[in-house]
Length: 207
Ligand SMILES: [Zn+2]
Image (cartoon, rainbow, N blue to C red; front, side, top):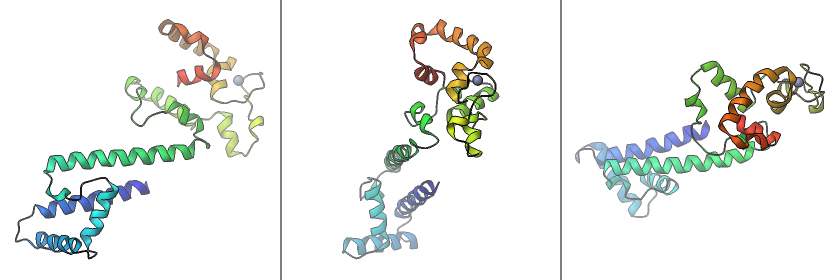
């Protein structure tokens, strides 16, 4: 969130500079901008020096004020997207070892996921989203709130004595076998090799 605010404020400064440059030449804003540009060109630290520094960070040309509006917008958007993706990938690496470690394996690229557009039923869509990001009520998660050791977060819906995690719930637990079989039959009809997947790959296929 902080990076988003920071990015928005940087963009606003650059956009404002660009707007001031196309103001009438007798306007105070246009004159102030040109004084600032002159100071910068003469080696003095001015407001425009800071703007120029922002341009370097965003990989925008230093003479961006002279660019046509559509070209400028195109460059700015492309630059913001690149810098956001870089930040996204960096932050992703930090959560790979935390609660979202499984999600990191499911989510491999930035962007909206297909299931959000394919599943029209809101309840089903929300259920899948919760499973993907671990905001469910399975013991592996609720046990965390109770500070239970992972090995003690066992499923109480069956007698397999297994930890109630996403894989157990989705692929192993007898309590969900009827619904599971319907799903598996449906997948088998569309994917011949599904039956050869191991549990882990099977889970990623589902999610
Ligand atoms: Zn179970």
